[in-house]
Amino acid sequence: MRSIKLIIVYCSLIIALSACNLPTAVPAVTSTPTSDGTMTATPTIEPTPKPDLGDNANPILLALPPSQFQDPVTVANAQTLATLLEEQTGYRVVAVASTNYFELIEAMKIGNAHIAVLPMFAIVEAYNQDAVQAAFASTQEGAASYGAQYVARSDRFTAYYNPSDKKNTADAPEALAQFSGKKPCWTKPDSPSGYIVPLGVLNWYQTPTEEGAFLQSQFSVVRAVRIGEICDFGGTYIDARTYPALKDEYPFIMDEVAVIWQIPPIIPYDGLFLSRTVPANISAELKRALDLIYATDDGKTLFDSLFGFKGMIPVEDIFYTEFVRVVNAAPVKLNELVH
Image 1: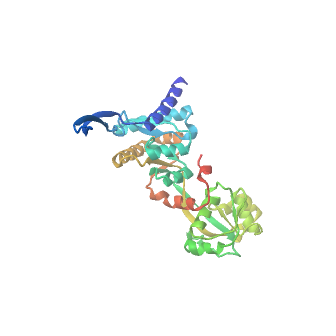
Image 2 (image 1 turned 90 degrees about the vertical axis):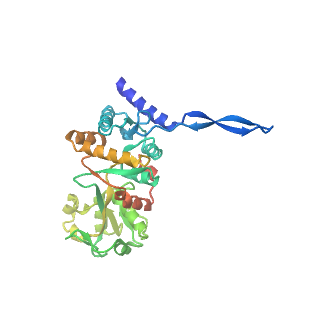
Image 3 (image 1 turned 135 degrees about the vertical axis):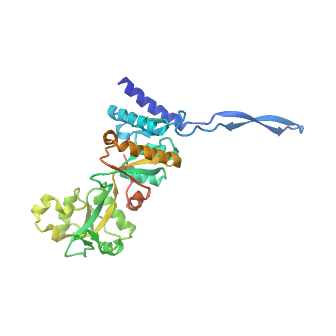
């Protein structure tokens, strides 16, 4: 336990010291006139250059997940990953800790952390602050993101989704205009597929609705839409209508409640990011090293244990653009969603 505590203390010191990394000064001489017209040599201060990123005096900082920074297994895994990155790149890499994602994002923004994994709403905050560049997206069952859908009674609204080929048959403005002035049902205020993203899309396309009702679960939204007394339409994951209890209660639910329009898979899982302060050549080397490490069986086990990654693919910033835009269009408070 003593060694673990030392690692955590060392991590804290690294962040503290890097935040106060003031340049040392060396004297240079300039001449300034005195009151009698003569010239007097006066020393001026010129900063010495900061060591290159990756040097021993300016290591690349690998941030632990904030919720796990005191877990011994996580600390050990972070140290292992740091060592593997050093072996692959030749750069000095140190594992560091932060207490919350807002602190971590600020550190990424100013270059006091360089590699970190962020959950979906922290991703939005990081891009809002222009703090990160995308490197890898985690995947589940081979997919790096998922979508959502709008559902409504098939006898009250026109469906612009073809279940046969699983494609929308109209663009969002045309399909969603029929929800103008109608009352939605949502799941929970922090649900990406059951509230935030569907509402953000409506707001982005300037489709005003009545104040929604929160029903706490996805299948409750489908049930309420089927009954037709609480709300006119709802937002759910794809495809909440197949929930077994719903099909038992309403055998014809798939016909009675239609998918009006599907939101494409823009909702991401956790992602691995680099700080925007990392130079392009170092970013490329770090991405290559992370990819090579993950390609091994031990690497996959390490990433799963450290970050919960079941799979991983390389991505660019554009992969997150639509999600960030839609979340920002929804009236949500990121400080309540980012933990």
